[in-house]
Length: 343
Image (cartoon, rainbow, N blue to C red; front, side, top):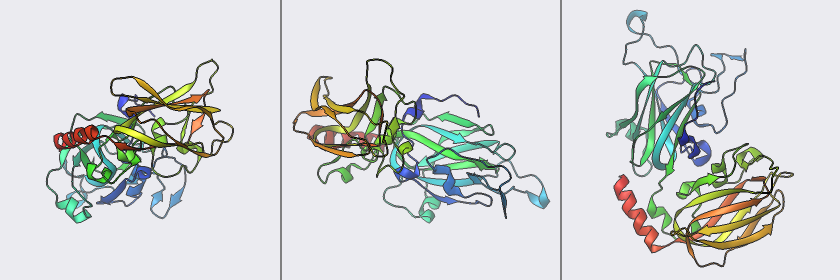
């Protein structure tokens, strides 16, 4: 497979099933079901695995379109799928992955987006006005990750993938920054690091084995690969991950989860808060942690912080990081203004 990895892939995939995404509609899925588009794992392929409808593909594949009297399809003919993002957000880039589709990929694709409040039905989405093109119709290659940078500052809830005229797409990745409804965050303390609440991994020392955004995903990790694991260090330094919180917050509790990391968890961890002015405050002193364990630590510091850095000594893997706290009034005001601007 070909294709350079653009910088936007450092951001979380807002369409992932594990984040709550869903493929809510497709006009056709004759050969392979639409739900495959948002699976978290990479697409796989086993040759000569034929079902009643042909070769089994780990992706979304439609039938061959035919025009009038069996002729080739018209130029504007297309197949369409609608994806509800797991959490609304600002989209920075899209990857249309045609892995394993070599003679049956779509020659061209486009992507549109819309923001619809609440929980719209399929019929409401199909009838909705306001779909906006974020990826113009353009060519894609087969068996490739096809990246498209998105230049939009708006907040979206759904995306619509079109294939011209038909074919197969293995995965649709929608990378961006989560922007949840602020009203859902006003009920008291919550996990201000969670992706679904607007948290984000801003940087990390190493992502050799898996993506650092995994540590902020909803729910418990199911296997080691659901977390973040670094390469083995051969120097005197340590690995770290820096999390941008949903907003400036005062933290009260942290959970450091090493589930499924049996022989490759960190030996110890520490947590450092970063204030808006860049100064630092200790939240958790360097503390020994155990393999395959959910650790919960109370935080006594009353400083308001915008980011938290977790240091892992010397290296290893984490399943999840939870940081429970309360937004400051300044943060709430800033988020309200931001949501109005993004609408």
